[in-house]
Length: 462
Image (tube, rainbow, N blue to C red; front, side, top):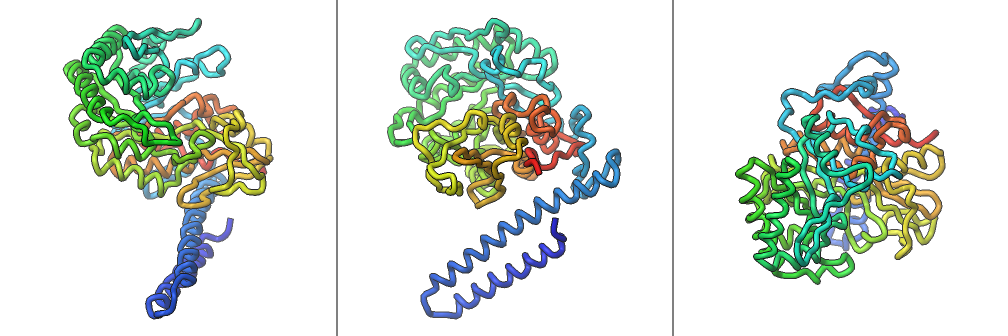
């Protein structure tokens, strides 16, 4: 890596160049479009250099410390260990962070026989709570619940195992094929059906001794290509549903959890101020940029976009109840032109991306083969992506997750959650970064003592 001092010198030169351009623009009465354009480019360059400086300096510190001694425990002023050795040991939470939550999302389909993941792969120390989804199908006309079961796994077995390991269990209904947005919208218009739904939820919660419930209604009920087909009554009906759920859960010291969507429509159409009265925790989804490409691809947000999304929510909901999310699931795409792989490049419509790139774990396998190109911090919107030929995928790495999780400590949020934890490298085989590199990074940042530092993972083959 280049000398950090030399890079810092470049940053200063770029800064003064930008300032000089700005002063000229202010002193001149001539058209300033070209000067402003130069200023923007200078500032953009400065931003990229800062990102490069931070990431490279961090990596160099790690490498230097590891070379000196693979057993030495060296920490920075912030208390973050500059070594990878401790990652081979079990995670141990810090006593002063015992109130922080790490919520792990697991779906019923993750336990299918064709899946490499099993309950034995779960590290119970890395999850304070588990959010289970896909376990019940709901008839939207009668709101009767039917349990989905596998030959080898059911809710009773999973919930019992988790609770015996002191992990709290939340149940989720919706957004996973169990109850579609339009179906939520339809039945909540009826007071009778709302009451019946709540009654059935409480029966399940009591029967399986669960610790909370999350109505994962991806509101409003609108397709991405036309998000103005929402039903206006949804705002009030959702609030009535939440009120009724809360009235039944809170007296039993059970949690009501709201799962937000990534779309601006959630903040636009929900009455967040009213929902605060009923909601115990907010699972905030700011990890993807959504747009009209969402059916073909998703973009893992940059830290800047991530913070802007989060701040929009924090202006209206309590920080201490905010659980910040990231994901190990990717939505790859096929490019129109292999040479045009930057942000804004053409994506083949209605063509599925390469399924081998759809999870963090599988992506590591592809990257380890040495082909393709990985790009970091291309812009203030796009974070990290990998491309080979017509294949393209945006994803979270351990570095980007660590930087995003810094917000939990800085803002004193309630905790963090990881979508689809089996999509992480749960056994450490594919990425060679230890078991659960994404989930372990989250825990170290949110609940840990700084005893494990995982450099950027996945790492391209030299």
